[in-house]
Length: 509
Image 1 (tube, helix red, strand yellow):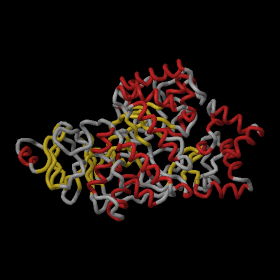
Image 2 (cartoon, one colour):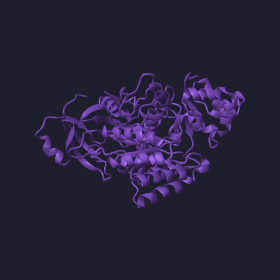
Image 3 (tube, one colour):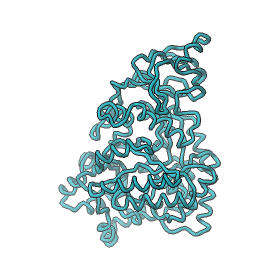
Image 4 (cartoon, one colour):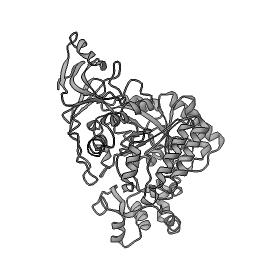
């Protein structure tokens, strides 16, 4: 499709991102900005030369915003998996992992983060400013970043979960303030991952006060989403209340059938906090399975000192005897599937952990430790653990933002990396009718834009950056599955970033 600084999206159904009912009309774009939308666009057209894109029968919506992404490195590689599903903005640096600030030994940060960031042995930036400068050159997304609490901790004290001294905590708070001043959107914690798992409430509250002074966000992967879910929510709300920071609870869910009833209690706790003035929202992905690293099921003190120390412990019979009984008792091994490993051998990838244990004649905990040792701890998993009724309650909640939580792997990635927003708009909107189309678009455009202070994105309105996704509401669809995730969606006509067409008829251009 021919590029032009002036584009007319003609005859579409405009869903502006605010949740308001759709309207018919045109959208006129000049020099990367929307200059007119709706009936007013027609008058402006006569005074301009433009390329016309016929949008009859299509929805014209703001480009989708994914505020919980782990594409920190891939947006720099201009990977198109998100773009093809209509995403034009991403917030990276989630769950305590950011590729900066580099510590004295960069490999310590890389060992900590490579399982989530899918990195190699050469990435890293000394500061937020350096990373954001690189991210500003991305051709596939407008990139905002959170600085990871785990990355900050490693910069100050290395990969250790011990309690910080006052001086160390002050140093960490200073580094956070520097990053906020340099332009990050806030900070994130990963309290189920070492070394973030060692953080006290006081530590998090101290950092929260730094974020509050600059009106930035604190996003948290909490300590538990299973037996300790409600306690975890209460802890993070207390951090927000005591510090005054804005709180974003990451990928809220109740993981494991035994704990599904706890979700209602968790939501009640969040609602009560919001009513008494806590600035809190949450995000959710529209899938019944999550994705993470296999080391997540270990007691996190086993990871103290990083992967080399963990490997040493797994080789030590006495240490294994201590670790084995503490491997997550709530894990349902038939629903935990290995998706990638260092060797990516067929005996592992795509198979439930329980099946592998049965084949080897070992119990699941021993099998976990053996596989981690064999694969040098480089193992990713998908865990099927959520309830369809709970998912409905989360997606339709007024405090919810919809995310991908997409994680790249060198094996079989979770389909949310390829298909989250098409799944939302087809299955949850068109088929199940859980949400109106306007509400669903709001949860992936203007709502996240407002939450993360993207002041000129997320709406089809005059003056806004012309990030636009045009799709057929009757045909948008995904065939991506857990077994075959790498499938591009259908039904997306064009995607524009700053007024330039970057996806045309489902193909990146």
